[in-house]
Image 1: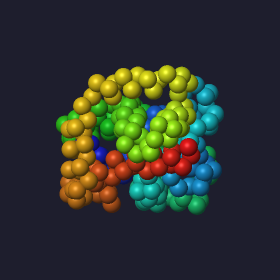
Image 2: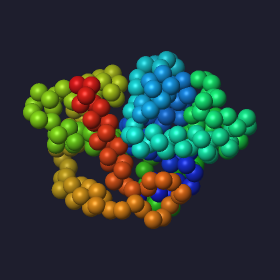
Image 3: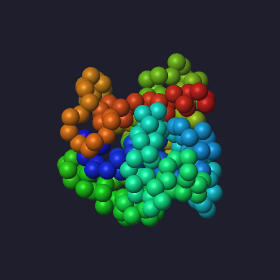
Image 4: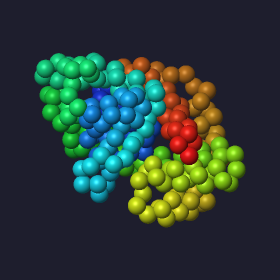
Length: 229
C-alpha cells in the first residue's frame, strides 16, 4: 500500500531497501559508493551498526530488483542532482548514494518529511523503524515455512541474529512471543492475493511497483541467509 506513493525514485529505492534488508534508516541513508563497491556493487553493502562508532562492521542485503532500481536512480535522478553530473563510474568511494535535489547529503529529517507525505497518500501510519520489525517478523515466519528440519531452522535463526547484529541473542525471543500470539491465516490469504496481482497501475514512474515484489525481497534475503548458514 505504501510503496507506490513515493513521488521520487530516491525515496522509493530507500523504502525498498528498508523492506528488503531490515536495516535501520540511518544505516541506509549513510551508505556510500565505497560501501556498495566493496562487496561487488550488486545486492549488498557494508554499513555502520548502532554502537559501532562509525565503523563499517555489518552487511545489509537487498533483492536483485532493488539493485536494478538503485542503478537506475544513480544513472538518472541522482545524476541530475549531482552538481558535477557524475555517473556511477566517476563517483568516488566517499560519495553518498542518496543526495537531495541540490546535491547535499540526504538527512533523516528530509527523508522523513517525504515518508510522511507518502503515508498520507497511502492512508497508512507507519514509521521507517517499524519496517525493521516487519522484516524480522516476515523472516521468522518464512524460516518456519522453509526450514527442512529443526537443525536447519535453528541455523537459520542464528544467521538471522547475526545478520541483524543483535548484541543480545534473546532479542529474538520477544519476536517469538509476539508471533505465538498472532493469527497468520489472514496474512497467508493476503500474500496469496498479492502474488497473483499484476503490477500496480498508480503511483510514481518506477519500473516495478508490484507489492508482492517486496515480499519476495524478504524471500531473497532469506535465501542468502540459507546459503550463509
